[in-house]
Image 1 (cartoon, rainbow, N blue to C red):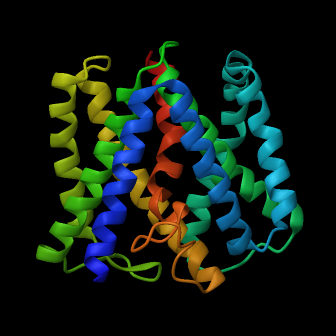
Image 2 (cartoon, rainbow, N blue to C red; image 1 turned 45 degrees about the vertical axis):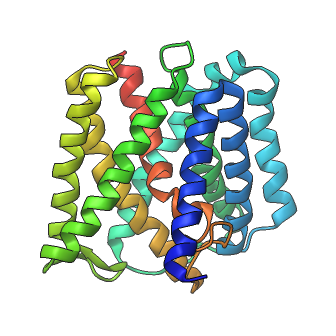
Length: 266
């Protein structure tokens, strides 16, 4: 089987599974996100050489309130954001320092596990509950914008790209590709606002800007982690695409900021 065909089949299975689980019910969505979370923990333990059993136990500790009592977990999320947003801002500053320093302190490694893997996925489970009742189209809308941005950033970069965006971390990304991705994501957000009316046009446009900019940064941060670990992919669960962290690096970075904005605007 050719690599292109393998990649296509893997991508289709991923999209069908994600959309199907999201639309079916709140619980099927939560179960899929928890599966992604623990696969992400496994991949991160390889990237940062953390103890796998210890990492899994930390994941179980923080997911237990979600499994046991969703309302309790919703009340904990604002406190999670107090840690998560500054942590992601730190990763942005650390990214643009441009070095490949690996943090070897065990405590720092586990803080990275919390901030980069566990908390983003747990916040993602709460994103469709921003208006209290489960609204799966919030998540689907976000993924549509992320896929749109990735697709058109690639097409525009391939067709018109000349100036490198951040060559040291991702040699193939270009400024032209980033701008093209942003423009087409704004167009897609306008279309979504017509059919997904739980957000107004301004909120969808803001979502597009955040998804495009933060999603790109998330991709670069993941590239930095992999360069630090000297590996090509975070995992191999998705043939042709790599691991869960490879596939969801944009989501990991964008979701906490989107959740915070939606809390403010609701």
